[in-house]
Image (cartoon, rainbow, N blue to C red; front, top):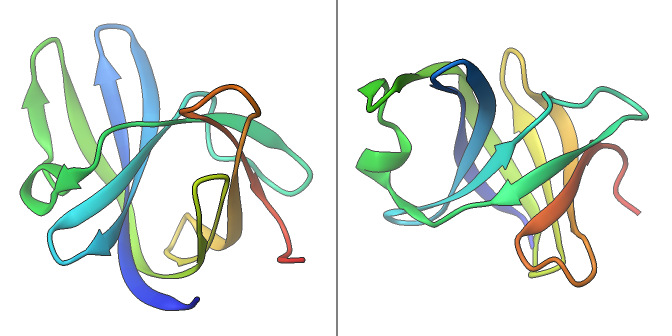
Length: 122
């Protein structure tokens, strides 16, 4: 499966904490969303990604003030969804900060938790 799509990388600040949200379009008005807790991983690093709800486009692209915080877009661009399954998602991002092939691998027995890392497609 190769599907050309779009993505946004958001910084989500609530009170004194922050995390990143990666959202990518999976259908006409549906965007998949993952909260990246400890930053975007570089080569040979893995981090936790928590799958959140599917967003409609207006919500997925929203930036501005929210209750107790704000959402800021820090990158966006095109992407290629190479694999889109319940246990493994592989996406090649073409952004200014998020560039290259990344994987979301579901952690066994943790429905919405994934290892997120940069790497090659096997």
